[in-house]
Structures are given as C-alpha cells and as structure tokens.
Amino acid sequence: MDTEGTLAPETPAAAREEYETLVPAAKVAVREAAKAMEFDREEYSDRVTGEVIETVRDALFASLLRVHVGTSDEYESWLDDNPEYESDMAGSENVDNVVWHAVPFAGVVVAATWQAEREAALGTLRRRAFGLVYRQHLDGEGDGADADDGPDDTRDTDEA
Image (cartoon, rainbow, N blue to C red):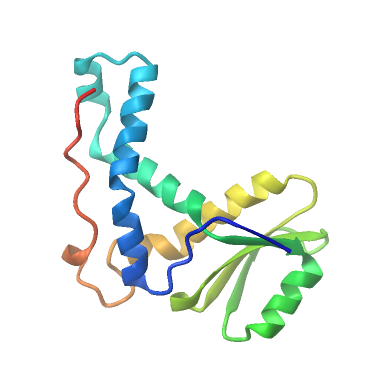
C-alpha cells in the first residue's frame, strides 16, 4: 500500500484553515496562467473572477488530499481495522485496486476502484471526496459552523 498527498484534516475547522491557506497559491496560479495566455489587463480584469480563483483553490485542496493506494484486499483490511468509517465506493467491485481517503470528522472513507489507470483513479477520488464531503464543511455548512466564520472572500483579484 502507498500513501500520496499531505492533506488529511481531522476536523471541519482544520479543513477550513487549510483551505484558507490556499488563497495566495490559487491567486498566483491564476495570475501566472493568465500571463502565459498573454491576457492584457483588461482581459484579465474581465475574465479572472473570484469564482475562477475559488475553482483553482478547490482543485488545489483536492489535489493535496492524502490518499491510500492499494489492492482490494488491503482496502478491505483497512475497513476491518477502521469500523467507525462508512465506505462510499465508486467503481467496479471486480477490479484489483482501490484508492481511498478517510475523513475522520465525517465518519466516511471515500474510495474508487481502478484496474489500469492509477492517476485517473486518484483524480476521481480526490474530486469525489471534495464534492461529497469537504465542500459542505468548507462552506461552513454541515458542522454547525456559522457560514460567516468560513474562508475570506476571494473576489478581490490582483491584476496581471
């Protein structure tokens, strides 16, 4: 079994904190991509919105999630050792490999099976974990947090 990624927040507050730290990286990534596409100031101002920066931040967060990569047997063994988690599996049961990410505060382990396309499975798993579990907590919903207590607004974009 292999482990990839660094992000494994233990609480919704820790997830929001990690998410917030990605704002500067998302802004830099968007700004550099806009420069590479040769946006002038007007085009940058028109096209680079807070939504664009937030989308990049979402993708960065998901791409950093710590995931385990192993065989179906290793996954089943992990589940046996961690009965407090409910499995949310995508894919076929008739393949040899599984990638998974456990979310302690949600009591769920999001998983995806794969046979030959490891990177595709990792991407699918991370997007699913973000969409199914983290999104609601990063928005301040689903954990009793006040929505105003979440990440700062990313609508203020820097010009190229």
